[in-house]
Image (cartoon, rainbow, N blue to C red):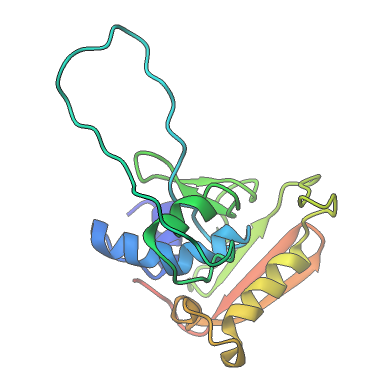
Length: 182
């Protein structure tokens, strides 16, 4: 298996089928929505070139209210579609379900034992308020999801995360308690 795909499976705790991916997206993708998870979700559609033809399939979502823009909100399915288009992830799956770095500069370095993942972050990424995105933000968010007092919906996706380090503003080290082949 390609090491980059293995990394995504290790950190997202998802399987290989679509149903599991979508269920995991509501959880592990929630971390990504804060800009610290491993993958984002739904992408915006773009217009195709050419002459329109009759037939085909038209898909629409009905109106649904969302309670918040928090990635950990377990609201209606439209919530995930909206939030994943607002927040960025360290890594997200492209339209071919191939992992691609987004806030990370590349796929993480993985230790031989599969217990340590080192991400290098892009410099100059800003939050909406102008504050710079740093490794401390990633560390804070992982630790928030790992804290049982927060009762995070997607906490299970962080069950094998032992600790997160931010040795400098653009490096994040995720330490697992055991290899996670999910």
